Length: 189
Image 1 (cartoon, rainbow, N blue to C red):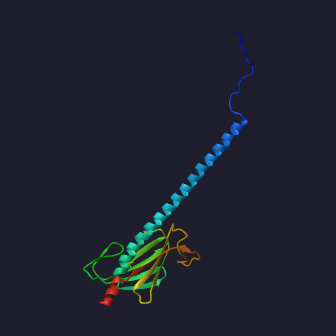
Image 2: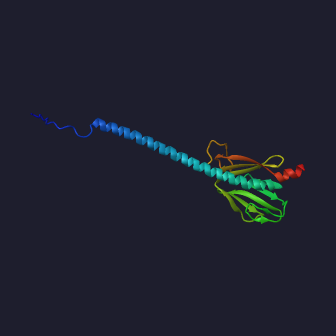
Image 3: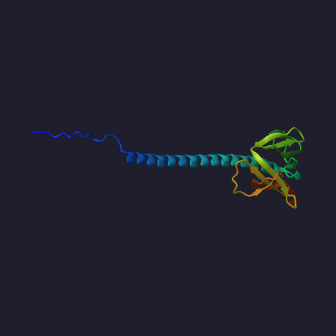
């Protein structure tokens, strides 16, 4: 029996065309993974910013609404400062700083840097909320409704915008209308 052996060696490895096709497919795959990572990272950053803005808004609303609902008189000192006069209807009340007051008292809210501060009876102001770009207070004509526009950090640009702190830059804000419940009840009863 005779075996014919071909001296030509069988090709080993990949051809240049096969290598180029595999590199192209790998590049497309990496670009897809990279694009997905970038999109997920942006979404995560936006969610964290919205979470912070929501927490600042919730805290501000809780603190301001409790005080404004109890107030018997409101004075807007300037657009970023409001003075609330509170006359006690019970033996004691908790102020914005957490102190228990046994006599009528006043609270003054103002913006300092990125913080909403509260001062009770002219004492040293304490920070009650951090993370604000701006805040604006306004009274309606009958002085029984306080309009508060709050611009927390991280609020998306599709919210209403206005220059709340007169720095020439519009800030995205949320507007809240808070009624002076004790004043309305006193007047209407």
